[in-house]
Every structure is written in structure tokens, then in C-alpha cells.
Length: 202
Image 1: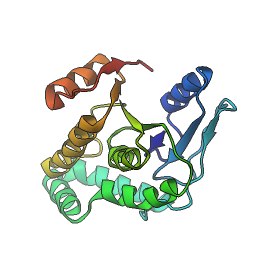
Image 2 (image 1 turned 45 degrees about the horizontal axis):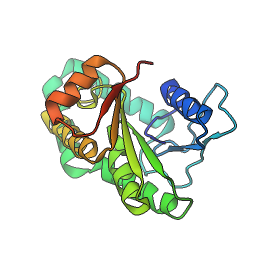
Image 3 (image 1 turned 90 degrees about the vertical axis):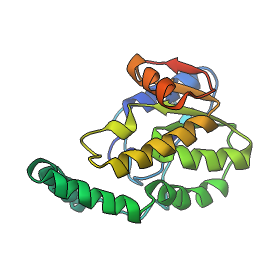
């Protein structure tokens, strides 16, 4: 399982891993962004939350929190300025590519997996690269309508970037899980994926 979570592991991911473990699977959860990802609950013995020795180089800790507060304040006080800055950032950076390039070498040098689960859009390109090398199946889990998160994305450039990656990831998926019916409807209407889709509520 690949996750872009920061700080704490999403309980949905932990529950899905435990369900797979109960069916006889061995599950590794790989934090693709935060090397210090933690979980305050108990995971079954067949589920491991791995360490990440080579996360993407990006702001972290208190500095990242400050940047987020500044962004939210700009979004509120000067929306056009905030949209411009975000658009410039997305034209200069390929965030998903950074995540993929940072994680793929380490993962490909380790054990091989039969199934790769991508928890949301930022790790979909990584899942596609790994699955191609391992001849593994891909399941994409959509926790939300990722490109439409108003708290994080304010420019059309950012939304188009993530919507494109979402479409590519869903097209490569062998199965899709959605957190609710609204997300399922969005996925079907926006991307018309060929893979079967299931709704699994938290």
C-alpha cells in the first residue's frame, strides 16, 4: 500500500490493511512522503508500517506548517495573488514525479509485490511504475475528489495537473475503491474508467 499521508496514517488505510490481513494477505504500508509517518492504533502482525529511507525533498516540520498557514491567509486575503503563486509552482514542479523518482529505486530494490494499492492521486504514478516492473495488479483508492480540494488547490493549473494524473492512474488500475457514492459518480463521469468500481465507506 502506498500513501502520501503526512503526520499520521489514515485510519481508512489501516482498516483496509487489517481486512486484507484477515483474509490471509501480508500487507506492507509504504509512506511515500513522510518518513516519520505514525499510527496510534494497533496493526495486525501481518501488516507492517514501513520506514522510508529516501522521501522526496520537500519542506517538513514547523516550516511546512508555517507555509500552509501563509497560503491559507493569502487564499483568504488576496485570492488572485494566491492563485498566481500556485500556478507558478505547478508550472515549475512535477510533484508526483518527485514522489515517484524518490521512492521507486528503493522499492524496486526490495521485495516484489503481487498487488499495489495507491491511496489517492499523488502516489498513482508511483503505483503504475512499480506494477509495470512487478507485473502486479493496481487498486486505486479514492479518499476524496482529490483535484477539487478547495483547501489545497485554488488555481485551475493545479486542478488540471491532478485531474490529469488521476485519469492516467485510474486508466491503469485493475480495480477502483471509492470512499462514497459521490466520489464514485465523479470518477465515472470524469474519467469513465474500464476497471470495476466499489464503494467502501469508512
